[in-house]
Length: 347
Image (cartoon, rainbow, N blue to C red; front, side, top):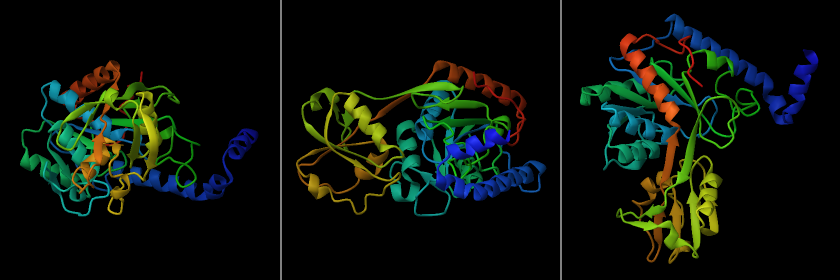
């Protein structure tokens, strides 16, 4: 056993090994916090509708927002009236706020704005997701299921179904932050309430449901008009992305046969306040839908053609079948207050 631990230790980088003691303290804090919520020492609220939480065990974007939009559309197609709650990462205010088509993105956050525009469902943001849910149900009492964008670790909100999203990083080096990417201990967290695991990458690191991600065959301008990607073949294009993995967007554009003369990789949730568009006057600039909710409202230099290329994200049918079965059972029982031993549905 000691030799195995030494082998695992040496397989990590020197910085991870240096931060390992801090990561161990992080793990103790995470376990203690969860225990306090599950014992009732810390308050956790249950509401009158089923709550589906979509989140990450690993830090960073892995495809939560595309999944939330796919879930909402699926629920709508099943006859439900879903609503969405989110913290609204990067937004300027702290108050509970309904995200409307006219809400400034700086006030709502880019992902809630994208979800609202893509689904038409009511979306509320607040620092505390319980506040967002309370405001949602007050404004839309007919809401019969709620999807929480992120929030696996927000134990103040009780939930009925937990979905963890993973990309090709899997669980990284398997260590907790800051020595690794994990927010919670793994695989320990898997046995404490996770119902569904969805992989959004091409090479799943462990069992779970799969999904497909590819760009649609057209791009969209600010006025809603569309242009076929095939019509952009042969042009020297500029592509930018302020998402967790910009290179994935660039690779998908190239896979569509587009020639990228220049790529601009920006930090996730980039605000573009200081971005100089004048350098690209007269060119065609491609961006993600998430970037477009901010960029389409900015003043562009003459001759710049700014286009967003939507993502087609599709979990495998078995994922939705498992979700529907879980939701039916939860609607019947409504029992599973916090991350608890209510079983996994991962195959």
